[in-house]
Length: 124
Image (cartoon, rainbow, N blue to C red; front, side):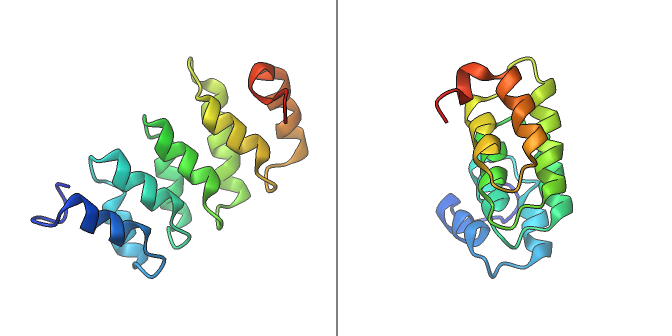
C-alpha cells in the first residue's frame, strides 16, 4: 500500500483488478510491496506483457499463479514462467499445475513438466 498514499488495501485491490485500469497505473501497482495487489495486477487482462514478465520473478507463488490465470497472458510469458519454476529449488505446485492446465503452453513444455513434476500433474 505504499504507492497510492491514503487509499485502503481494498480500494487499491479494486483498482488493480479493474480491467479498465490503465497500463501505466498497472505498471506502478506491480511494484507495490503487497503480494495481494501484485496478484491482482498479474491476473488483470489489461496488464502489459513487460509487467507480467517482471512479475514472473516475484517471490510469492500467488503472484506467479495469477499470471497463469490471466486470460490475455502470452505464450512468451508462460514460457518464461515455465523456465523460472523449472529452475527453482522449491517450485510451487499451484503454479506448475496452472501451467500444465493452460491451453496456450506448448505440448513439449507440458511433457517436460510431466517428467519433472510427475507427483503434481499425474492426476490431470
